[in-house]
Structures are given as C-alpha cells and as structure tokens.
Length: 149
Image (cartoon, rainbow, N blue to C red; front, side, top):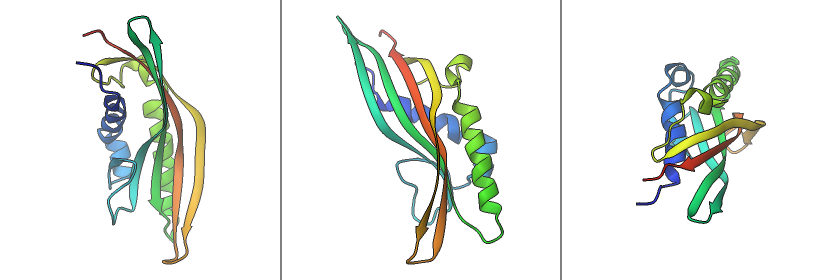
C-alpha cells in the first residue's frame, strides 16, 4: 500500500494538539484549513504547496509547505494579542527542527527537515460585526522520505 501524503499534515496537527501549553493558549483546538463556527482561539494548519521528488523506482521524497498559524479574536483588554504571540512562539518551538528530535514522525515516513521558511503576521477586520482576528505563525517546510514497506 502506498504512503498517504495526508499523514504528514495529520502528524503536524497531532503534534500541536498534544501540547498542553499550546492547548492552554488556543483552547478551541488545532484544525486543518478551518476551525468550527464559534471558535475564537485556535490553530490552523493548511497546505500551501506539495512537491514529489522521484527516482527510478518511486518517490524519493515529498516536500510540503504548510501554513501553521495561531488565530485569536481580538479583545479590548489586549489578552488576545498576548495569547496569539505566545502561541506563535510555541508553534515555532514545537516545529522548528522537529526532525532532529523525532517529534514529527508521520506514519510511513522519515522526517528529514522541518523548519520555518517565512514568518506570518496579519490582522483581519470583519467590519460587518466589528471584530478583529489576529493571525500569527509561519510557513513551515517539511521534507519527508517514504519508508519502504
């Protein structure tokens, strides 16, 4: 059975969701692409790009570029700004060089590289309901090699 590329994204989500410190900062969870309605403090993992590298007998490596970000609804007391910054730092700590510590171990793959390629920081304004959403995180490059089965 061939390896399933989505197992890499699943492993990133599982790593982040299992961290008690990140969960305390973003209690509405870690989600792929979108969070459920009503969530106000959460983490998003989204695929930006994926490339397969081939050799004579199949895939030699897969390169993922993932957007991993903390998202918080802004608050008038500034607590959300502090939480989103702390969550961004925790995401960085968990994923930066996760291949060296074997923290990131997707099923069927060996992780060869995991690092932040770009920092992400922006604020969305929903004028209809007068809400601001703070986004902090990064684009993380993950390079994996399939384990022969």
